[in-house]
Image 1 (cartoon, rainbow, N blue to C red):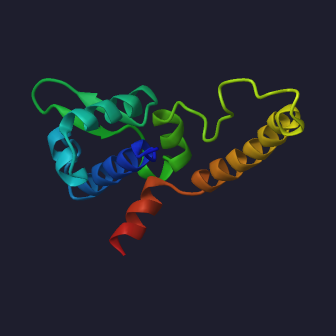
Image 2 (spheres, rainbow, N blue to C red):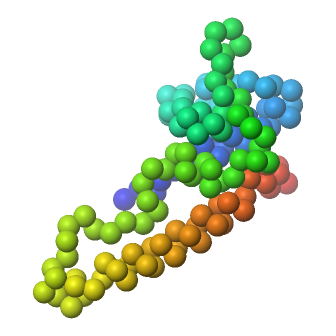
Length: 141
């Protein structure tokens, strides 16, 4: 099972947009972002589309087309990014009902639900403590 890299791709894209902004380039094309991420521009456009729907980036069409940050990088948390690009829950129970005749099957769902809720809350809190600016500053250090 492969790990979900959508948050990583989106955070990379936003950090690159912020660095470009700091260097005087307010707008980057998906091809320019894709070159930094080292992936296909189609994947970047899909990610930037998710970020645009969440208000984290804006898109320009026509002359000067491309993407820019939708709000200051210091106001975009990694939690915002995760919520924009990762529709699945962090952890999930198995899809079929376990065997209720089994002592483990009978009681495992509520136990794991509580544990997964606690882990998700901690994960969200960790992501909420980091902004795109923080990531960029740490990356450039």
